[in-house]
Image (cartoon, rainbow over all chains, first blue to last red; front, top):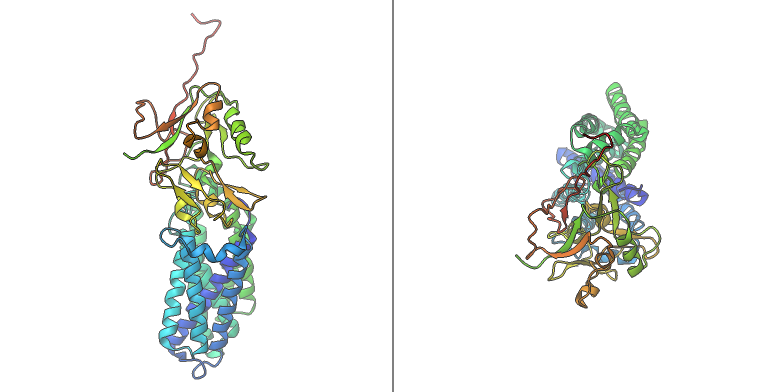
Length: 266
Length: 188
C-alpha cells in the first residue's frame, strides 16, 4: 500500500456500498417491509442496485492485477489466503443477492445475504491486516470497512426508500456516523502511543488533508445535517461518498509498511 | 529440526560495499528498480556512526512465510531445504505478497507485471555452488547457513533495525555490529 491503488479504492468502496445496501435492506425486511412487491415495492430495485454495484466493484478489482486473465485462479488457495476467501465470499454474495432479488426477497435468502455480507466484510478486513502493517495487523480494517458499509449503504438506501422508512434508515445512519467519528478520530491517537511504524502511520494520517476531509466532510458534516433535519438530506450521501473516497485513499497511501524502516528503530 | 537454509549476516564484517547486491543483479539481470537484495545502513538512532554499519538483506526464507500464506494462486512453495521459491508462471500480479511481507522481500516487476524475489540461488545450491551474493562478498560478511546445524552462540535473530516477526520465524541470523575503538591524539 505504498502507492495509491485506485482500482482497489473503487473495488472496496463499491463492494462495501453494496454490502451496506444489503444489510440495510435486510433490516428493513425484518422490520416489517416484507417481500418485494408487497410491503415495499422499491426494495427489489435496491437489491438489484446492490448486485450491480458489487459486480462493478469486482470488475474494478481486475484492473489492479498484472494479469487479469488469471483472476479465476485467485480462489485456489482458500486454506490460508484471505484474498482467495474474499473472492469466494464476494462471488457467493453476488449470486445470493441476485437470487434473493429475482425470487421475491424471501426471508431465508435475505438472511443469507446479510450473513454473507457480514462475512465478506470480515474476510475483506483480514485481507488488509497483514503483519507488514502494524497499525492494521488487527481487527481495525474490518471496523473501518463496516463503518463504510453501514454509512454508505444507509445513505444510498435513503435515496431509494419510501418516506415511511426514512426514519429507520436515518437512525441507522446516525449510529453509523457517530461510531465512525469515534473510530476514525480515536484510532490514530491510539496509534501515536504504539511502536515506531505505528506512530509514523498516525502522523501520516493526521497530517493528511484527505484524512481530515474524510472526518469532516464524510462523517461530521453529514451527521450534523441528519441530526438537524431529522432525516437524511439528499446532499448527505454525496458528502459521505466523497469523504469515503478520501479516507480510503489515505488507507492505501499513508499506512506505513514495516520495510520502510529497515535499519531504524521498531 | 528440519533442514532450513538461510543467510548469516555478519554486520561486524560488512562494509556496505553493495557487492552482494550487484552480484545478485549480475546473476539475474532484474529490471531497473527491482532489487532482490538491498544493503541498509543502520540509522544513527541504533548505531551512532553515520553509514558505518549495515544489514545486507534479501528474502529471509521464513519458516512460516507470509508470502506463501497470502498468495491467492499458490505461486509460492517451500522446498525441503527451507528455501521459499516463487513460481512466476502462476503469479497474476495481485501484489498481495508485496504488501504482506514485513521485510519487503517480494518486489513488483513492472515489465512482467508480476512479483519476484530472492530465490536463494536454489539452482546454484542444487549444483553445489554458493549463492551469488555469498560468493561475491569480499569480507565474508554473508554466508549460507543451515539452521538445523548452525551453532554460533553470538548470533541473533532480531537485532535492532530488523522487525521482530515471531510467527513468521525468519531464517536470517545476524552478528551485530560493534562500536569502533576511538583513539584520541590527546588521550592519556
